[in-house]
Image 1 (cartoon, rainbow, N blue to C red):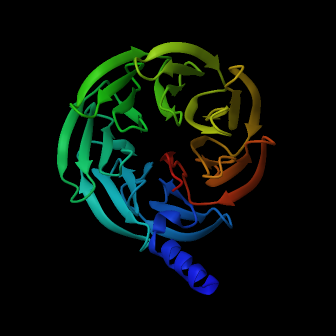
Image 2 (cartoon, rainbow, N blue to C red; image 1 turned 120 degrees about the horizontal axis):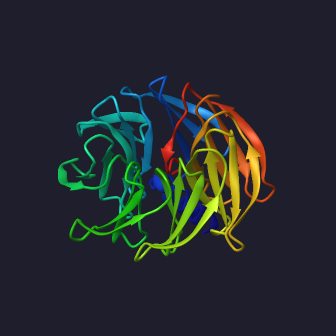
Length: 314
């Protein structure tokens, strides 16, 4: 009976790829590829060719898909994580940059930097469902855990838009710091964080009504954000300083700046909620930070021009 139970559990694990070991998908813009890092060994297992200067990364939480935006490829590419292969290229037009999946894995959102729009596609046939007008130069995007709201950072407009995903109408648009780029939302969906590139600070907002709560100074040209340790610490990549700022969210104070590689950009937290992965553009590496000790525990060579803008660990 015990042997049968173990065999049955093994079948379940093997049948559900989302229960498998997590991988990090790092877009290497200059090399036109994506490095796949097995986060159990922190070694690269695959290098997938993705043309069009890949930048943004979005993980589908329900399907074995990873979406990669290609600003010079007129859209985005779809990676099948079971096959570890490119299975589709989707044309959007313009210059796709920010990309995100909804919480149910049914839709993918693609921000067009030049057209000031967000295109909505289904994830079954990749049919265009809707094109949304937003602010100037939309970049980072996040979807609320309840799948109700899409938040978009409008870089040139210095604002964040909140879009109702039932009606596809903009509910709120709120000014933040100068040139917001990366966004992060806590797991409850109650607070949203914005990295403001030109004003060197982080905006904290109440997510339902986009009420501004605080503004916290960080390092030079903050780019992207990740939460860790049960949303008690916020990690921010500072491009010009080659550091990651750490903010204690209880005191809302910066408590450290950790040196990583040159020009850190994308940042994402491991499912263990403790390891924070940072893509370093100039160094073509990924740094791994321990969120408790606030130290870099490993550096992994990747490809040239590592950006990984978005949530890149499934």
